[in-house]
Structures are given as structure tokens and as C-alpha cells.
Length: 100
Image (cartoon, rainbow, N blue to C red):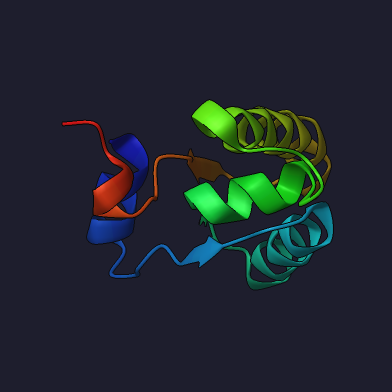
């Protein structure tokens, strides 16, 4: 919440990008660094599945879960080097896939 309050006080929006691969994550982090901006990185259910590899079965959402975890680890480890605040939004999915 502190990051959102900071953005509000300084009159700027925090951009959010939906990603499907480590190269897309790296591009977002590089752009955020160059813009000196915090960033939100999003993963959809399908994007997370793609991150794990389309050759994996997604029965029970297994590939989507694996991809979300792998992407989160990548962001956590690589974002430090770019020096920008990152919010990872990993529940960006289609309403029809939500169990509630």
C-alpha cells in the first residue's frame, strides 16, 4: 500500500504489464528501470501455463501453477538487479476459472 500512496502523492500511475515469458519480464524490468518507475507484472492463467511450457498438461491447473511459481522466482531474483520496486500480480485470470 505504501507504493500506491507514494504514487498518488507524486501524481503518477504504476504501469502494469501481462507477461508470458522470462524475456517479457526482463523487457518490462528494463523499461521500468529506464523510466525510473515501479511496475506491476501480471500473469494470467494461460500466460502462466505458457511460462511453464505449452507441452505440459494443464490438468488441475498444474502447468499454470508451476508457471506462476517459476515466474515469481524469476521476478524475485532478477528484479533486484534492475533496482525498481515490483508488484507481482499472479491471480490475473479469467472469471470462469475462479472456483468461487
